[in-house]
Structure formats: structure tokens, C-alpha cells
Image (tube, rainbow, N blue to C red):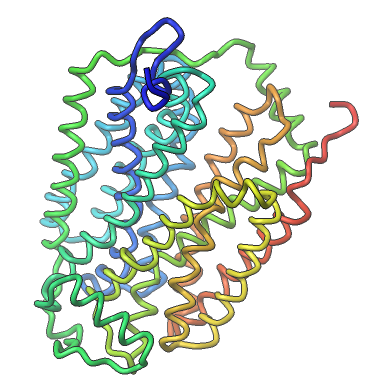
Length: 444
């Protein structure tokens, strides 16, 4: 048996290649759903006449679901096992996607927010369960390899979300081939001159409505239903996570976590990272389109986010593990955060092709931050690792706060709003070089 097969085979000879493939589909799907959010802010601003601060409620609804559902998801995983947790998450995911059909008829902002709340409630279950599930689908010594392999497909989903979403939601803006449109946009960025023959129509002439949301979300819902069917038909291993220990032990572990300074610093860093990434993605299209001298359309901006920003994000994810073999994770994280602090300073003070290039490059240096902060935060925590991981998952709620704050600050000039992620990266710089060093209480 080759090494490529052995990572899915247990010591007793069971091969979990197919279950792993199904689980990997989940990573791609939730990456797609997350990045699809980044084209909704500008769409709702035009379709429902929302302010930038109001459109930030898109992310508040989605990421707020993590805060509301993290504890129920953890309880369900412990009580019912991985498979049932995944199925429940997928069912919520599908219901939320199909809700967009009546939401379009209602045509009120709250209706779309409700759908996003359901979708991301389901994703909370999937993200809470899927990562540890990969660790039981084969030889334990290859657990890290399986998780990293699954994460590469998550990065692919982050690319496809804004790319497909922009083509379907902003499709009325241009008749260009998407790759030709992307090429023209890149040329515009490096020349500062818009040579596109397709005019950018003002918002009032676009007759923007929300029916364009039906195809991407119903299509996503159909894919989720197919995955549900496959999960029911497949012989997946039903493993219940170790829930040994009383509630008092859990509480004792959570209290002692506060004495681990590097963990406390890490919780703050992860909260701010998710806030920064979400804020940047939420107003990427706004920032690019509002650089009026370049004349870049909304669809072109969305494609630029998908192939440019998310493409670099994926490259960083793929190469990050190799860099960490020669550079300590804390130093690499701190260095990348320092670069992004400077890039956000450029974005906040310039609103031209240079600013857009800086904004795109920030995705490359954000790529390693979430897994790096996560790993550095739980390092050396031993039996408290599970409790620490649950707390870190809840920090995703940071994505619910930043977009509205950025929208309010950048109401007149979007570039000013990027001061918020700049401050976030400044703290992550501190965490990488200083705060991530293990500091436990003496009595631990």
C-alpha cells in the first residue's frame, strides 16, 4: 500500500478514503459560502438603498451565528457524534439557501439576514465537527496531513465564491468574458488608465433587484442536498468524541486557561484577525469601484477579489506550511502582520491603483493568520486544548462587528474605513513576536 493511501487507513485495515472525500466537500462548501458574502454588501447597497454601515449587517448576521451556535454545536458533537452533527449542519445549510426564494419575494433586508443566520448556524455545526472528524478517518499519525489536505479545498471555495457570485449577481454590468474582464482590470491597475470599452453604468440605470441572488443560493442549496444524500448512503464511521470528565472539570479547565497569558492574547488576536479579514472582504468591491478615476465595474471588482485576492490567499495557504519549516510560526505571523499594517496604511491614505494593489496583496499576508494564531494559542495547553479550541471558534464573532464599524467610518470615503483592520493587524504583530510566547501560571 502506497503512502498516499495509508493516510486514510486505520491500523485494523479500514479505509476511509470515501468518507474523507465527503468531509472535504464540506470544507469547499463553507469556504464558498463565506466568500460569497463579500459580494453581497455592494449588491444590497444598490438593491435596497442601504448605507455602508447598514450593509455591514450582512456579516453581523452571518458571523453572529457562530457566537449563538458554537456551544450548541459543541454539545451536539459530544452527545450525538460526528456524523449526526454534520448532517444537522448540512440540513440547516440547505434550509438557509432555499430560504432565499421567499426572501426575494418579501424583498426586505431582514429576510435575507434571516437566511444568512440559518446558513451560518449550519456552518457552525460543520466547522465545529468537520475538523476533528478528519482526525479519525485513518491512521492517527497522519491526522495533521488530512486536516491540511482538507483546508486546501477550503481555500478553493474562497476563490470560487466571489468569482461565481460576481458573475451571477453583477452579470448585467458587462458582456465581457470573465477572464478578459480580469485581464483588463489588471492592466488598469498597473497603468492607472481604464481601457475597457464597456461603460460603467450608474446605479440608477441598472434596475438592481434581488432576483439575481436566487441562482447562486438555490444552486448552492441543491449541491448541499446532494451531499446530504451521499452522507446518508455512505457507511461513515460514527465516532462520538471523548466526553469524559465532569462539568466541574471543564469549568476548572476554562478558568485555568485565563492564567495562560499566550492563550488570552491569542483569543484577542483571533477575534481581531477575523474582524480584519471580514471587514476587508466586505468592502473590497466598494473600495475598488469607488476609485472613480479607474472606472472599474462591480463585476470586475468581484472577479478581481476572486482571482486576485482569494487567489493569493490560496497561494499563501499552500506555501505557509513550507515557510514555517524555516521560520518560527510566531515570527512569520508577526512579520506578515507588520506587512499588512503597512498595506492597510497605504489603502487608507490612497484611493487609486496603488491602493487597490495593496488591498489585493493583503490577502497573501492574511493567509496564514487564522491557523497560525490558532496553533500558537493552544500550544502547551495539554488537557485544556479542547476547551481552548471551543473558545477560539467563538472568536469568529469578530466578523460580526468590524464591517458595520468600517461602513460607518468610511461612509463618505471608503478608504478611511480601512484604518480599522490596520489597528487589528498592529495587535497581531504584537501577538506574533511577543504575546504568543508560552506563559503559564506557576501552579499549572
